[in-house]
Image (cartoon, rainbow over all chains, first blue to last red; front, side, top):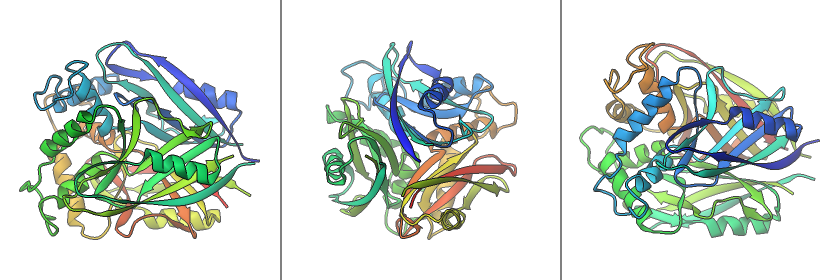
Length: 140
Length: 140
Length: 140
C-alpha cells in the first residue's frame, strides 16, 4: 500500500559553495521506511539551489563556482536590486539558472543516483545562511 | 488513503515578463481537497518557463529579465531558427536554461514555499500568448 | 487504487547532440499500465541532461547546441578539471545549467506534453556513451 510522509532538513551554510546532503536524504528515506518510491526535495529559498553533480573530484565543484562567478559577476552594474549587497542579485540569477526542486526515484531503500552523482545544496550568498529543504516521500 | 487528480490552468500573457500563479495553484489545491501531498506543475510550451522566485521586490524580476536579455540577445546572428522573429530562438534558449516542471510538497493545505517564494510563469515571447499548465495533485 | 512501478531506459549516444526518447517513455507508460498519473524521469549522469524542447524544426536543437557551445566553450582555460579532455568540465556546466530530472503528468495514457514538446537526452560529451534513465510511474 502506497503511503507518503513529509520531512524537513535544515542545512547551515558557511557562505558560497557546495554542501552535500546525499547522506541526510538517505537517512530521511530510512526514517520514512520507504524501500521503493519517489523522493521530492524542495528548497524554500530564492538565493540557493539544489544540484545533482559529481561527487568524486572536488575540482568539478570549484570549476562550477568559477564558471558561475564569471557568468553572473558580483556587483554587475546591470543590477538594480542591490539592497543586500553585491552578491544579492547574482544569487537570484544563479538560482534561476539552476533549480530548487529535485525528484529522485527510490529503489531498494536507496536513491536511484548514478555512481558519480551527489545531491548538493549550492549556497549562492557570501554569508552564512540557515537553509530549509522540505522532503516529500512517496512509496512503500 | 492517497488519491490523485489532474487540473489545468490557462494563463493569458501580454508578452515577455513574469506572471504570478501562486494563488491559482493554491486554489487548485483547495479544489482538489489535498491537505498533505505533492503538487507537480508542467508547462506545455517550449518558449516560456515556470520559475520559483522572489515575490517581494519586483526589481528582482526586472533584473532577471535584464540579465537574460543580455545573456541571450534577441536577433543574435548565431541563430538560424528565426521563422517567428528575433525573439523566437532566444525564447527556446531561455526555456532550456530554466525549467518547465516544478514539484512542490503540500503541507496543511498550502504549498511548502518559503516566505519569499512565488511561482511565476515567465513568458519569453514578445507577443501575448495563451499558456497551459497541467497540475498533478497527489495526497490526502 | 494508486500504484507505482520503476523502469529503466538505456540510451546509447553517438556523442554530443539530442536523442529523442518521447516514444520510449510512452512505451514505458503502456507497459506500466498507467492511464492517469505522474511520470518522473531521472538521468543517472552528471555530463548529460534531460530536456523538453521543440520537436518540429531540428534547427532549434542545432541552435541550442550552438548557443551552449559559445556559452561554455570546450577547452576554456578557466577550468582545472580537465582529466577527461576539453569537453569534460563543459559537460558538467551544461548539466548544471539544464536538468537531470523531469516530472510529467499522464492523462488518457499519454504524457501531458504540448503539441511541440519532445523529451530529449542531451549528450554533452564528444564521445559515445551509454546513458541510464530511471523512470518512476505513479497512477492508476
